[in-house]
Image (cartoon, rainbow, N blue to C red):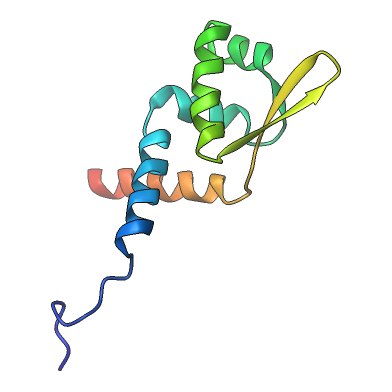
Length: 106
C-alpha cells in the first residue's frame, strides 16, 4: 500500500519556485483588478488607470511586474501602448481561486 510519504512530489523545486513567483505577482489586489480589466480586451495604460481609479505611474509599475512574469504583453498601436492578457487560462485560474475562497468560508 502506497502512503503519502512514498509518493514523489508532483512539483519539483524549480517549478515550485516559478509558480511561487507567479502567484506572488498575482497576489496583489491591484494587479488582480488590472487583470480583470484585461480579461476580455487589450486596453491602453490610460484606460486601465481610469477604470481602476489609479494614477498612470502606479498602473505602469504593476503592469511591468505582470509583464516580467509573462502574464501580460504590451502592444504598441501608434502612440499608445495596449496591454493584453497572455493566456486564456487566466480567467479559469482566478475563478478557481475564487471558488477556494468561497469554499473556505462555508
